[in-house]
Length: 487
Image (cartoon, rainbow, N blue to C red; front, side, top):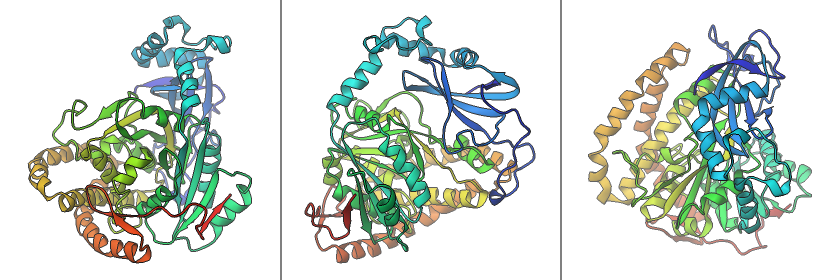
């Protein structure tokens, strides 16, 4: 991602805006970064994310799209004067020319037609026609959003979901171990007239448990999961559905995760180091012909995507036993629920697809303290995930052990990023992650015993399922749940 001069038209040229007081003082020289999207067809540029132009920015990261398809991100430094979208498109072509030309060639279009708007409905590019055909045959889908005491963020996410360009879907809001009635009140007040929005309560805390409850309730052929603090692209669900058609036996699809705002040093560092963005080329992963190079596959499951943007064939995920209730946010394991689900898909012989056109924007942690907690949680989740593999599949212990030196080498390569964090007032992040990796295994083992006992005693219909042997409740009878209200 190169930095190019100029600022998008409509930006206010202003002195750096101070970071909000709640996030602490910004280091000298830090400036927040705006987020824009540029659609090359028709040359439309707009602010995106949570800030959406609410403050002045002197630099920005621009997601470049062509016919709705994301091609890459270009960084713009706007210290001189505003720049028109036409000039921005020229600069984007300078950096993303091969991707633009490849897209046009696949559409059967000449390179000179990149900025031409559609003349009529009969003059649509091939990719747009294929998208319309996909929408006509897309299966009924369920979208599960686990939430706990965050009605403001949840409302924004639900509004985005209701605006999805998808023909038939339901939204299942799982209110997880809430201590107030604010989430239920939100659903009753704002979404009572939306019959495809359903509310359920899950008293046992934990994101994996909440996701399992959503899976139990899901009536869709595919079930997608996202968080209650994301900005959802209108094409998100349709492009996830496209991912299941990329190959035979695709059981899981992940998508592109971009930042919802870059207003603080913590958010900018997380975006540049952790890189939830997995690229702009669709990919397939399996244990056969689509096995990627590298010594850490398939144990580096974070390379496949993240739980904020994932979908499964509902029958396949149920057959695998759903998500392990001893993992995930809200447990001592602190994470690893998405990683273990991805691994289970591959270990069962299925294919996992990465579809970058399925986009959500995630709200990164804004301050140093919460970022340190997050890095600890990342490490703990990874340690819990690897421990789970060994406990469930002892035969893989040797296979994992000989890969440890390669994992250590990868950790050494991350040290420059840790030093950059120290220089930006975010000291100790890499150390927090390593400390989390040590805490993850015992945390998982404790939760494995404790949570599964609670899970089983509270839900007597539990059955063992899947190659890993962890349980999942029998789906409840439709229409008879006491804590489910159809909205």
